Image (cartoon, rainbow, N blue to C red; front, side, top):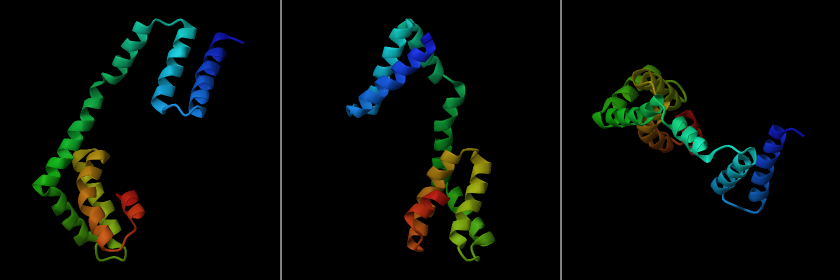
Length: 144
């Protein structure tokens, strides 16, 4: 058996054994990764550098800023205005509140560019409204 196949066996096997022994998943992933790294003889410093390099990506910085933008739009009242516009467009149709949710998400996604910010901002308003109208919580969160 070649080295790569053995490494995969060590990784998957040790992970499975630790899960069966009811280790926490984070520890099981970490320990099985360290075992595989030691088997392959890779320098641990290189692994640490690769981990930092993987997280140190400029585009990842945008995610918290989009969430902050969504919260600012929610606090500033833009979310309620978008919901009112969406309600005027499709609110009169049967099941209109679910459609209002989708149309408001369409507008908000176009403004902020982030589905996470959209959910954080509009979800806090629309999910309670949908709950009051008798929509199922599971359906409300899926639509949002």
